[in-house]
Length: 373
Ligand SMILES: *Cc1c(COP(=O)(O)O)cnc(C)c1O
Image 1 (cartoon, protein in one colour):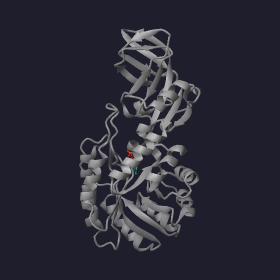
Image 2: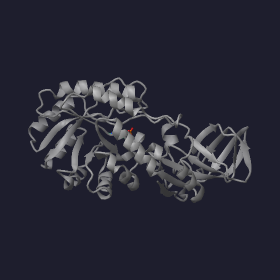
Image 3: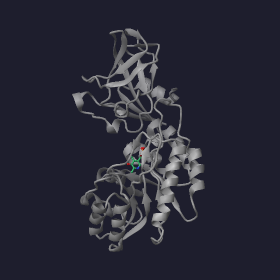
Image 4: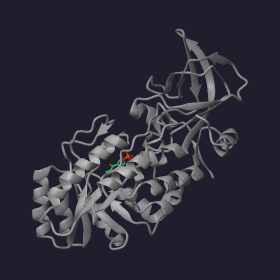
């Protein structure tokens, strides 16, 4: 996994541990998604709500999807004129209420998760455009996460929502929202979109006006093959073929937008051989980069061999400073040699990385954050 020059330079000059974000890379990637996909593009902030990343993305997206009152307040502050879609399960009445200073231009859509939530929203008696989040029993072969269970609504709950909406004319039904699976490549994700559209068209038939389909995020990031990318061109071509005149399609990816722009950079504190295996103990660990534990993979990394301390031969298992056997960033990685003082840069650390990690466990210092590009 070659490091972009500016990231490499930064990795070699900053105090470890650190996050390094390649904003130029992020802008180029977002521009390529924008160019490839003929649908509205909302970025799911929960993947990484870093203010500099949101600001870099702003020119390339139609809006930001937020999933909590906290994200809503943050995005309002960072991007005061961005359009916002408010999703997420378990929205409180206070969170819904807090969305309304945005009303009109900026509060673009509220994604309703249940009849109970719709009742709470209706009780506020404020005008809003809503999508109903559907939970269809779809085939999604190969998905790494299936968003079944509590997310969205089945046909019966959706029927209840239609009754509620008929009595709450201040809420405008615009269409359906479906985020049904994640970790899918373009072909299976298009298949899910096709099923959502086919089902949604017939379900919305007879409902006046709306023909809006948010087909969610979930585009795959392959942590085992960090050079591979989701095929946005094929996905875009497929969506264009699925769309009928007058319909609005929207996507809201997170991981596949920001994963590639972030690196977690640190140094080797110790190396050892134990029971025939090589280990490198790094400054920091999974309390800064929880992704490999959360996803059950080995985080891809590059070693910058600048250390002059003791060394071990690979394959090497790379661990952090936490007193738990779970603090493993990569197992039996194919490196030839790793030495105390070497710099290690973990790739694909731009999404669901720092922001999902348990920072305070063991009270180690927090990483610095640096931006290049
Ligand atoms: C998390 C989430 C997304 C983004 O998913 P990615 O896998 O990061 O692309 C989009 N929509 C909803 C409703 C989500 O919960």
